[in-house]
Each structure stands twice: as structure tokens, then as C-alpha cells.
Image 1 (cartoon, helix red, strand yellow):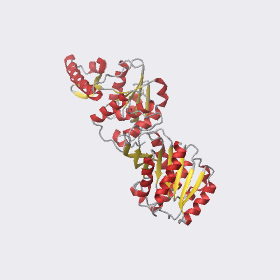
Image 2 (tube, one colour):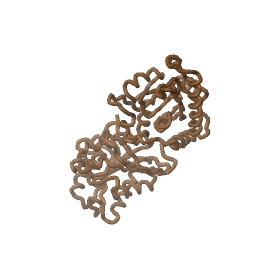
Image 3 (tube, helix red, strand yellow):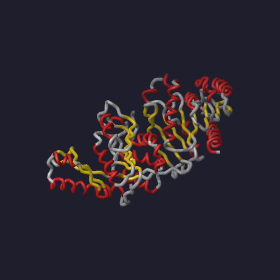
Image 4 (cartoon, helix red, strand yellow):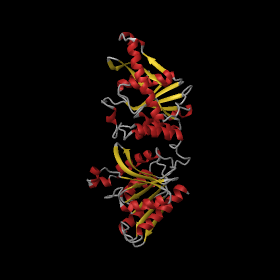
Length: 432
């Protein structure tokens, strides 16, 4: 299993932890990389987020061998067996502990920015990291959390080597790991983006969680405008997109581009901007990688495009709990209709611009989302295909012909009409 980044890993991990929602858990991220993962888990579970600062106590002459660990609140976990077998002097142990305690205090103050540590007494604590190498720090964190009063300890990570995963099952009351690949050599190889997590990011995420600014509104809309480039893992391929969410957006429209087009298409961007002005969110993204686009045949691989659109839709649902619609152009419309025909698609509305719905074949009859087909009056071949498609659809549907427009709607005012028709269809079926 390959993760796009820590955000993606956290969203997937959260789904595997849904059964803990009723236990009123506290989510604890191991700094630094574990905090972005834990942030997504806490957000999905509606749980408070904190950082779990643990310092391993290394044997003076063999630092990688830990004789114990310390945590906040004076928690001290010591392995008497290692101390005895290593014939460690108390003075040496005290020196190591003193140095690590100073660093623990510094880190805790830095990360929380003066906020108090969350009380774990009697709570279910979910300890989260971005992955496991040896598991020593994670195991120590579980011991510290238990010593801080947690009634139940759950250790959750996206990836770990099989041997470490086996050992860690005894470190917590429950161990959740999404992937235990046999070919494991480093955590970072299982992420497309495993860039370093700076202290400032940890501080910011913890502050947002503490202030409640990370939470969605009841409708799942953003409290402020969001405009960001995103990376989406769909069917094992990393897709790039542009996500725009106006403040308070009540729905999001995903764009499936057609042959020879991309998320930079001025026509689709024109429509997207009109939707944004109407308060609708948009996600424009490429269903093919640059290398795949070089092969013209790929734009007609409708099944592959639809599968990627379905995966991307699930990714988007993890970001915003609002209704989702599809806007498809040319062959992208066929992919949108095929994806919408799935029994569990739950798509609120579909709009096709100059589309090739015929490429969705018999699956058109399975589309349940209200569908608007927009075709240029001077695009006779595509117009005939859309008339046949409207007859094949069993859902609410409508064919709108833009007089005088050709396939690309390049005539003056034609694209504005497309934008207005799409806006009204989505507002009426996704929001109204």
C-alpha cells in the first residue's frame, strides 16, 4: 500500500479506527511526523488531539539500546533487566535521564505553545505515528500513556515491517496497522511525499485542533476560502488537482476532462469559476498522468478513467462531507456517467458538456443522478449521440442544445451559457 502523503495516510487510518468513535478517545501524535497523521484521525473521529512527547533513555555506551523512557508528568519507565545485564551505574543513568528530561520539557513547551497536556485518566488513548521502523519509540509511548492513566491504549500506524508489527501487538491493548509489507526497508519508501515535518507545522496543527478551527461545519463546508493544489492517490496512481472551496460551500463539483484536455483547460476553468462565484466548490484534476496522456488511446480507456474518478471521489469525501457532483467533457463525460452508474456511487448530479455518453454503453441505464446533457447546435454527430443517450437514461435527465455552438463552444457567449446551465443544474440538485 502506497500513501500519497501523511494527510492521505491519516485519512485512511481514520477509517480503520471508526469503531472507536463511541469510546470518547484522545488522539496522541508522536512528533514530528506522527502529528499530521494524528490530526486527520482526530478530525475524523471528532476527538481531541495532543502530542505525546517521549524521550528514550539510551545506554551511555550504546545509545541505540534503550534502558527505558520518560514522559511528561514525571512518568518513568525503566527496564530493570537491561540495567542489570548492562551493569549500569546509577550516576550514569541519572545523567542520561537529566539530559533527556530537559529536552522533553523543551519539546513539549514548544509544540503546545504553553497549552496544558490533556488528561488521559480513564480515557481511551490512540497513539499515532506515521510508520514504524523498529517500534522502540512507539512501544515506549504506549507505556508512558498507560502510566499517565489511560484506561485503554490503541497504537495506530499506516505501515510497519511484519516483525515489528508482531512485537507491538503486545505493547498496546489494540494495534491497528494498514500495511505490513515484507519488502520493508524504511517508512519513507511507502510514501510518495515523505518530506520532513517541521516544528512549526506540528505547532500549527495542534493549535488548530485545540481552537476547533480544524473542524468542519455541520454541512462539512470550509469556514474560509480554500484554494490549493492537491495530490490524489487513485488506483495506485498519483493525480494532481486544484481544489477550490468558497467559504461555506454546500457542495463540490468534480471535473472529468476530455480527450486532449487537462485541469488547465480554459473552458472548464471558465465553468468552474462560475460555479465558485455561485458558492460551489470545485475540484479540477487530471485523470491521466503526463506520461499516459502521450498515448492517445488512454483517453478512450473509459473504465480506467471511471475507476480513478471513483477513487478520487472517495478521497474528496474524506476532505469535505458535502454532496458531490460530476462535470464531464467529451470522453470525460463518459467516465463521469460510468462512475455515477455504480450502485454505491451516491453522486448528486451530473452535467455533460459536448460529451460522449455513448462510450458509457449499457451502464447509462444504471445512472441515478439527475443528468444534464449540453450540446452545441452545430455539433450534429455529438448531438445525435446525446439524443440516444437521453433515451437510454432511466434517471431524471434533460438535453439542452446551445444554438449556433460547435463542439468546443468557442462562439461568443456559448461558454457562458454552458456555465449558467451547469450552475443552475448543480444548485438545483446538489444544494436546493
